[in-house]
Structure formats: structure tokens, C-alpha cells
Length: 467
Image 1 (cartoon, rainbow, N blue to C red):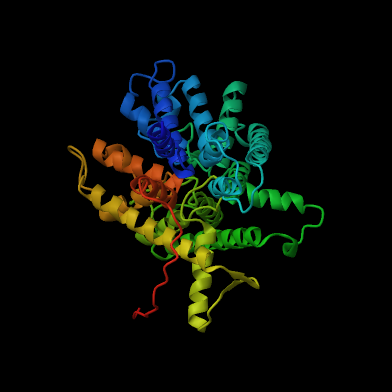
Image 2 (image 1 turned 90 degrees about the vertical axis):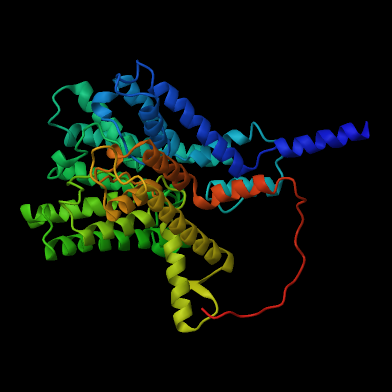
């Protein structure tokens, strides 16, 4: 009888999933279910097989926007609706949804468990998951509906059919807020480059979606007396860093394309240059919409390098975008400033940042860089497909960063890759959306599941190394 109890306890311990493991498994299940649905004749044409459906479903759940099919023609209206639902699932927070569902699967509501769930939501505290998720859903619904209304009445006015205009407005509003980059037209939004309403609405939705629910909630809570000092440090840091990156991207893109005379910018006037540069600067973190051609022939190498930097940084914690996050870069910059000044503590806005946060920022950045480089190394082995010419390393690196940062910018590489190369992008999109540290944490917990968990009380002697 004693052996039976011990065995049952051992089995129960092994079957109980941690939050990272549950998130990874649930994400994979949603992708496989979406693949099956999109491959049905009711959702797509004969051009969409299981592989095309898998790639599209992964790109939708990870809100990336990379595609090997034409969304507007290869998917039926029902298939487009299913795709929009998957964008909502992935954008509103695959992690938030799995954490909410975990309350019905995993037992135990101790403080440690609730804190663990909070980490998945990028929350600091022990607030209820249900309340947080409701707040995320309500905020998203209000902004998406508002964006769709403006696009319907003032944006896509060239679409004469009312139903087509309504669906185009709603779909692009959903895609923009979720930083997805999926569009119903093969040229994305290039035909609306001079339409200020479309550009402004899309920029606002992308930025607010990238801010994250915590930031928008903080701003809304302080709307009556909106003062910068009343906002949390996280909110102020996100807004400040985002505005700086948008400005750097906008004027940097204008500068690089004007000095080197990029093919596309040389054909338009300054006003169109500014609108296109602003839109692409915002979209690069990490929406993936384009109102100008993104290709080797149209943008200079320096411009592509600038876009890669913006893509790699990405949106903010808790937002609908990917990348290493704006606060990670802010923490690294603050740590660098502290080192140059010869100080011991990392200070941001008169607030001391813990060493744990700085170490996490370093870990995220280093792990992400290594993962992208490994992706580029593996992708370089494909070097084209069939009769296609080999891709340059810049094209492959750009595509890898775009996939990992869940952006969706494409230089025409994705569709020409073979299944091996596209599988690398699928893995990159999945890892980039979940977060490199969360995935490594889930793997580490699987490897060490059979070992006893105890706090390490051993102290080690200190010794310095030269760096």
C-alpha cells in the first residue's frame, strides 16, 4: 500500500505541467488545430495543402505575418474569418489565454503558483488572472472596433461594396492591433501609401497594441490628471523608448535612403518619404505591414540593417508584438551607462533596477542573438530552392530576424524556400512569440524533472575575470 501511494505521488508529480510547459503544449495544439481547419475545402482553395496551412496557422498564432499563400485569393471568406480568430488568439496573448485556462486544469492556488502565472502575463503581483484577461479583451475590443469604424467611413472608401469594405476594415484593424501584418491584398497597404487616414489609424493601432495592456490601462487610470510623474516607471519607460525608436527609425530611414539614393525613395517627394518612413518605422516593431516595396532592389543595405535593428528590438512586454522588447533595451542601456560612470547600481528615472532584471535582459538578448544566428546558419544551407538563385546572407538574416521577432517583413525569400527552410522559419516564429527564456525554461524543467528540487544554500568564493 505504501509503494502504491509513493508511485501515485511520483506519477502525479511527473504529469503536473509547469506554466512554461503548459504554454508550449497549448500553443502547439492550437497551431495543429488551426492547420487542420485551414486545410479544409471550406476555408481554402486547392493551392493550400497541409504544409501551407501549417505555415499560415503558425504565422497567425504567432502574429507574424509571413505567408506562402495569398490570403485574399487562396483563402475563402470563412478561412479569412478563421485566420482573424487565430490572430486574436495569438495577439491578445497566447500566454494570457493558457494561463487563464490553466486555472481549470492545474490544481493549487498558493501564492507561489499565482506569482508563476503572473510571470506569464508579464504582471508584477498576484492579481486575478480572470480580471486581467477581461481587461485585455475589453481594451482590445474597443480599440479594434474604433479602428474598423474609422477605416470603414474614412479609410477604405475606394471599396464600393459595403460588405467587402466592412470586412477589409475589420480584418486590417484586428491585424494591426495584434501587430500581425496579415493583409487581404498581395501588396499589403502600398496602394494606400498616400491615404493619411489609413496610415494614421494603422500606426495608432500598431503602437497601442505594441504598448501592452498594462501601459494602456495605466494611461486610462490616470486620464483625468494625465501627468508623466503619475504613471508607473514601466509605462514611462515603454512610452519614452518607443517614441525614441520611432523617431530614430523614421529619420534614419529617410537619411539612409536619401544619402545612398534608394530606388524607391528617389521616385517620391519628401511628404511621401516621411509618411512611408514613419509607417515602416512603426511597422518594423513588429507589425509587418508595408506601404512601400521591401526588397533588395528598392531599399539600400543600410536601410535594411536599420529595419533589422528595429525588428529585433520589437514591441513592449505584455504587448501583441515580438522582439526582445523595449524595456530590455532600456535596461541594457542603463547598465551600460552605469558601467561607463563607474557606478554599482543601475538607476532609471531615480529608481534602482534590481540585478535580477538586468541579468534577465542580458540573458534574453544573448539567447535571442544566438538563436537568430543559428537560424541564419541553418537557412544558409538551403541557399535557394530548385531553379532559384542562391540568396544573399543579408536576405537570409533579414528573413530570420523577421520570423523570430514576429514581424512579417519579407524580401521575397519565404515563398522560394524549400520545406526545410520554411520549417526553420516556423520554429523561429514559435520560439520568438513564446519567448526564448520561457521555451528554454520549459526544456530545462523537462530535463530536470526527475531531480529533487531544493534551494541551493552552498556559497562559493568570489573571483574576478578580465572582460
